Length: 245
Image (cartoon, helix red, strand yellow):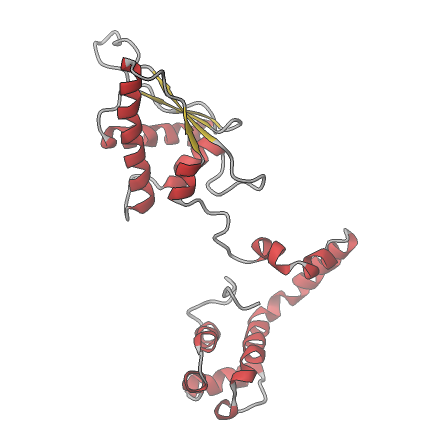
């Protein structure tokens, strides 16, 4: 029950700070250090906890955490009761109670549906041309730039965009879809002929969210060029919706 501090329990509030201190206390010494103080007495009084802070034991820890949480959640109890009644009508309440770990992701903050860079690479299938062809060499060069861009977007502090934006462009969602982790397909589009003004191809990346396909032109020379092109493609998506940019 207490693996994740609920979002509703403000970490900066007196109750939130005390909850964190009590939760992290692994010994009786640390527990008493957390509660035997002015803030501890104030919290005990606010939540109506009958024991004195100086008499608390490790066996009391879970009950104390539960009481702090219930006090903070007090205003939400009528809404929770209404939700429980609705779940009962559709015969969902008992399955949820019987399988808390399965349903935890619905009711608690979780990282379970967040992509990792390794997961992204593992699910990426690249459609290359035949070995030995000139096109294959261009594709490999473009692919290396693409991987560098993806790694920077995931691991850098301030990249032009985060990997989640790229995944939303390809799949329609920043997080893993409820249907599971999709197979991502990367395809390459040959450079266009020079335009009427004599400039090189400036096609933008395209995506099919239905099939999780990403198509990138082969004209990129640097990771900066690719970042810029994807940012422009994302701006088109925001204006016109997902899919082809």
